[in-house]
Length: 165
Image (cartoon, rainbow, N blue to C red; front, top):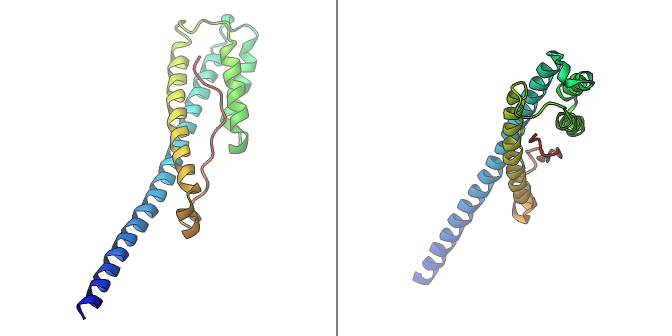
C-alpha cells in the first residue's frame, strides 16, 4: 500500500512539473509573438516618420538638393504607400536616395532626417532581435508538436539596408 502511494505521489509531481513547463512554454511563445508584432509596428512607424521627414525636405525645394528633389519626393511617397511585401524595396530605394543627397548630414535641414534615421536603426535592431527569438522558439520541436504556434502568424524579417545616413 505504501509503495503504491509513492508512485502516485511521483506521478502527481511529474504531472505538475510537465503542466508547469507546458504553460510556461505556451506563454513564452505567445509573449514572443506579441513582442514581434509590436516591434514590427514600431519599426513601420519609424519608417513612416523617416519618409515624412524626407518628404518635408523635398517640399522645401531647396536649390541645394539639385535634381534630387523629385526623386526624393517620389521615393518618400512610395515608401509611405507601399504594400507590406513591397516595403523592403521601397525603403531601400529611399535609403539610397538619402545617402546620395548633396547636402551634408550636419546641415540644419538634414538634422531631423538624421535623427529619425537613427531611431529607425534602433527600431530595426530591436525588430530583428525579437523576430529572431520568436523564430527560434517556433523551430523547437516541443512547441511545434503541440501546435503552440498555429495561432500566430510567422514573424517576418524586414530586409532593409542600414538606415543611418
